[in-house]
Length: 152
Image (tube, rainbow, N blue to C red; front, side, top):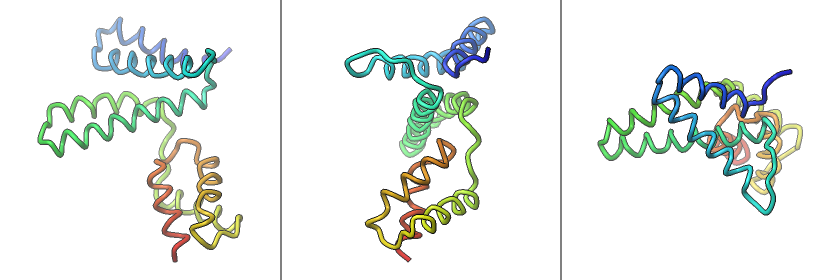
């Protein structure tokens, strides 16, 4: 039987705690807290699928990336380095990110298959691309590419 992504994170947390790896253990605790919060959000408790857990982990990674950038802008490199160390731990659980060429190919394919010609169809194209990409690219990068394709 294979472990779910949440069980893998829990197991890795225990391993990090035994190894006294404070950065990894602290980061994984935050990730598990975010997963638990998502499970109990709403009116009833629900178990998250691996895809849902992956979305939560990606959101946590995005938070770390934005925080590191904000700390760099505020001339606080020590805090930025802490966020980047946490991001490195989180990225170990995310699928490999698509390169720009591959993402552009997927966007072009979605635009062509839907016959999209204007910004009015951006939502449909975004939905098609997000389904195919499944967490392997940043939503902002996807939106920028789709916008560029639909406005030329």
